[in-house]
Image (cartoon, rainbow, N blue to C red; front, side, top):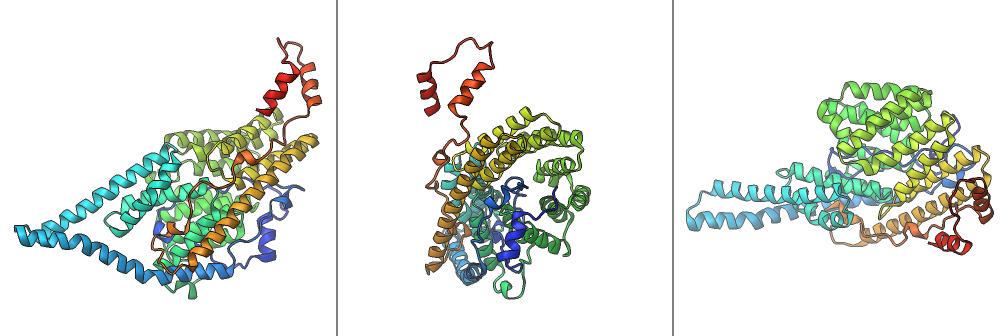
Length: 471
């Protein structure tokens, strides 16, 4: 990987305070998913075009953490009232009908656990089936219920929280992800922001780093991961943190360090943790081997990652990233047509979702533009570059709207309680269809292509060609 500065690093030097702690959802506990950052980092003259401003600054960071701390007493009060609302009927039942009070309490806890389990199962199934509108509809009540009955609903709360974070990651809602994390930090660690630069809870801090990583703030994310690894933790935590640190180091161009971190992660990974990490470990291994030039090993790791993505029903996130990496491998092998096909598959897969991650589309499309430019296909490269910039602008528009909505929510005196309350998970106003097809070849290029194919049985009439192009 090139040693020139990455876009995120340049942004950081210009306008990012390295002490700015962007944290992750504290109510989303230490079992957060391991997010893969959105796309590679283009390394050419196209680089500067993907730079984005720092949307959550020091002032907003402080407001979010302080609001979480301020809402902490309200969250405790709400939980006490919730338990009383269910406990009083149990007490009355035992007094009126002679039931054991202890048995009534256990019965109440069982109902709370069972309802939380069933609700979380609905969310998980909807997420696996990619029914994201249903997930959005079910999540608020599920997270509220499992929070009120926590820790008895620990597993169901983790499952619902996992679905929430994955939804944010898949749709590229990284500013909201960061805001939720900051609020959660204050909610579970009141006043901690005055004493620490990052959360004490390793899971919350890991999620902070993931939010930073996903916004291309690789050095800041790496700092958080390194700080966490200095603290005492079990092997499971260390394996997850090392896995994420390896990804950060790849993005920073520190391949050997990334290799060491990933190897150490594998040593600490049990079969249970390996299932949780899923395809990501093999994907990162493939990225390292690609940078080292070990293309056969990289391909094997990609195939393993694909298999795990399908096995663990995480193919929606896995497949486009593996395709993008395969495009790099094919380009290194000189198999340019296959590389171009993999790039197009990547972009099509991401654009085919209901609420796509525009920053991922921008990154991969810009990477594709760089590839085309290297092949001397200047016009197509510029067309893809324009398309990437349009995706970037859509992402920035959506993120700016999210920041304004978050600020409005913070002005309300009503306690937020559930961090998800900061987010608006409805469909965004701007869709992928708003992106024009810049990459469509000119008419003379199409005619030239047809002239080079003498075996074509039939050629469509011009008017039909026009109508198909419009469709």
